[in-house]
Length: 277
Image (cartoon, rainbow, N blue to C red; front, side, top):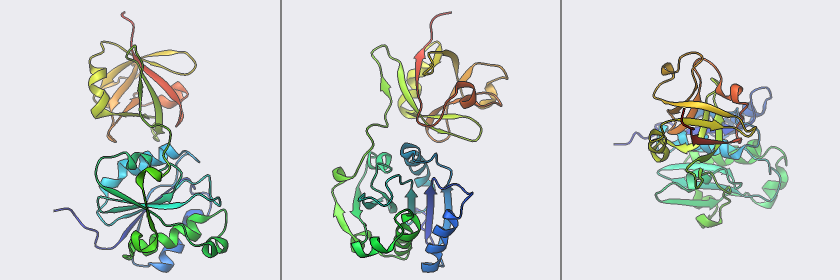
């Protein structure tokens, strides 16, 4: 039997960082309306405006939370514009976010889902800060949802195909077999998590005798397929691992692969079969 939330859980994801009072004000706005909820931070260190990275954080975190959790994802370059506020309902969880593509990975997952337009009235929009919808609009909506209001009771249903999606978050395989990949995230250890699901692509790499990572500057970096970080001795080639988040990742032994390769979230690289020795 699935574990159900006893106290309502609201999980927060933003690109606000911690140097400013923005996260605290958002939490305060929720707690004033729903003082009994549990607030959990997924992260507030998303790269600013990087929607694909934020969508990845949501996707890999969702199943670790109980059903009934309300996720609030605010990476919102279009704050104050006519973009909608939407709520995705799937598998007993709710995802509140701007309609800007941040929900793409979740929308593309199999299974039943429904989405609702929760954009407040013109009067409520006028009363809110045009630059801080997270505090003035998302927080009150999250509190309502956590206290049992249904998205269908707050707003109108939308067709899934009418929700904004990012252009593509999938790897591209060239005619020569090489994979054109994007960096979804660089963790604090410098590991580069790529947009290649392990289940889809690990077998392909295992069939290659040699691996190379080609970065945008044209440099080819030798790489090896590894099972653990410990297999990568200090000074060894770059490692390609089946990461814990379900995606392939690039790593070095006790060093930053991102720093060595000059990679950041959103950067493109190519993973190819290396030339024979």
